Image (cartoon, rainbow, N blue to C red; front, side):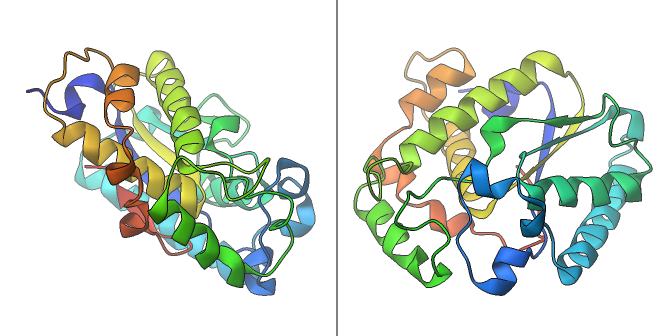
Length: 229
C-alpha cells in the first residue's frame, strides 16, 4: 500500500503558536470572535519562541536543500497564530503580505463551546477526558468534537494541496488542531488499503473512535516546530 506521501504534493511542518497572552493569563480563547483580538496575541516570551522556531525552520530548509522560494506559510487567523507567522516570515525574510503567506480559516483553534470560552485553562482536562471516551461528541452544544476538527483540517489540506506543489508548507496553528492533524496523517500513512484513492477518502476511512481518541499523544509545546513524517 502506498503511504500518505503518495497523496501529498508538498512536505509539511507544523508549528504551534508561541506562548500567547491567553497562555500567560491561563485563559481558554477558542472562538473566532475573541481569537482575532489583538489583546490575545503573543506574549514577549512567545515572540522569542516564534523567532527560534523560524531559525529552526530555516535550518531545516537548508539541510533539505529547499529554496526559500518554495516555502509557504499557512496560518490560522487568530491573533496569536498570525503574530507567530509574522515573526517566522521575518526570520525567513519572506514578505508577510505576499503570496508565500496565506491565512486559512480551517486552521483556526478548536472551539470548545460557550461555557469554556474565556474560562480557566484548568478546564482542558475535562475536554480531553471526553475526547478519549468519545471523540465524536462535543464538549457542549456549539463546541467542536475531535471529528469536527478532522473534517475542517482535511478541507484545509485539500485546499493547500490543490494550490501548491513541491513546496515546504509550514502550518501555524494551535495545540488541539495540530495534535489532531498529526494523529490523522499518521493513521492515513499506516492505513491498510480499503479502496480509498484520494486524501479525503482516506481520512474518512480512518475516522474511528480508536484512532481519534489518541490525539493527546501528539501534543506540542508552545512554539514547538515539528516535521510531519
